[in-house]
Structure formats: structure tokens, C-alpha cells
Length: 207
Image 1: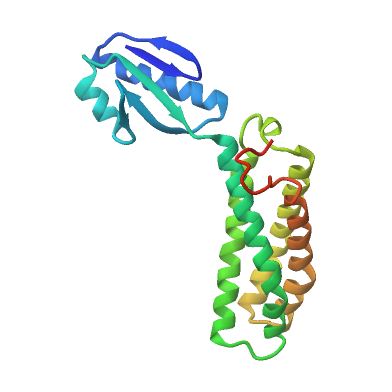
Image 2: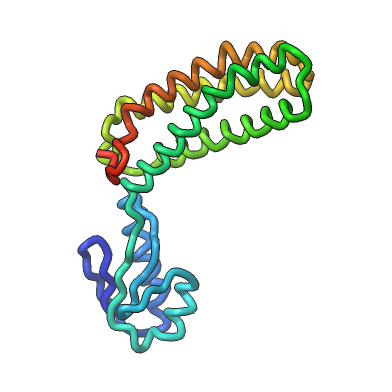
């Protein structure tokens, strides 16, 4: 059988004992290129799950396997666009949220703060995942801007212990201060940096 991946053609015998070697070859190529598997096209049939079982049942008759990977540039750009939109909304909401803690916060206010913590976690996770992509400098429109954005996320990480301690102690004034004077400036800076990275609407590429 022929395995087609990134314009490379690998040939294997149609034997059950070869399946593991096939998967190892595919995974090695994906790891080296920093790509993610989307689905396989096996003899013109789309297979998007239970790959091993499919191979095991059909290994004797498979002729061609096309490995289809995710469009990494499009995936990164969509993630950056979503992050930019989240930051834009959060910046608009942060000042009223901080002001609410200078008064008597209601149950909804505490719920909004919990949602905010989840949002920060999501920002950190997406930044870390993108930063681990190989050849990222060839994908992003402005790699220097990306590094500045990562620095902003790290500043956000530094602010988290203080926020968590204030939350544990239910120090409402300190929570308001941290949101207004530490988190809001970082969010604003991060948003400005992302504007250099997010492509215009309708463009599916980052670079």
C-alpha cells in the first residue's frame, strides 16, 4: 500500500504486523512538521476515527492512504481571532467588575469573577499551545509581536497568585484594585499586540 503525506509517498506491505510501523511513520512525520492529523482518505473513503481497527479489518486490500492534516495557519489565526475578541469583551467588562467589588458584590458579581478566571486559564492554555508549534515564526505575520504577547500572558500569570489570595480572603477592595490596576493594563497591552497578529476578516492565513 502507499501512504501519501506532505507530498511524500511511503510504501508498505499489506500485512497486519506492519500496521504499527505505518502508524509510527505517520506520527513521526507529523511530529517533525508540527502538524495535526485531521482524517485519512483510504481508497477514496474518509476515515476520521478508529484508525487501527479500520486498518486491521482492511489491511490486505488497502491500496492508497492519504493523510489529511489540519490547516495549521488557519487554525492559529482562528485561535488568535477568538482570543482577540475575548480580550476586547473582557476589557469592556473589567472596569465595571472592579467597581462592583468596591461596593457590596452580589452573587452575580462573584459568578462573573469565576468566569473571568476561566477566561484567563483559556488565554494561558492557548498561548502555550501556539508557542509550542514548530516553525511558528514562518506561520505568524509578526513573530516579534507574538513574543511580546507571550510576555503579556506571563505578566498575567504573575498577577494570579495575588488575585487568588485576595479571593480566598474575600478582600473585596484588593480584588477591585488588582483587576483595575494590574489585570486591565495587561489585557489592554495584550489586545494591542494581538492586533498586529490577527489578519483582516476573510483572510484565512496568518502570514
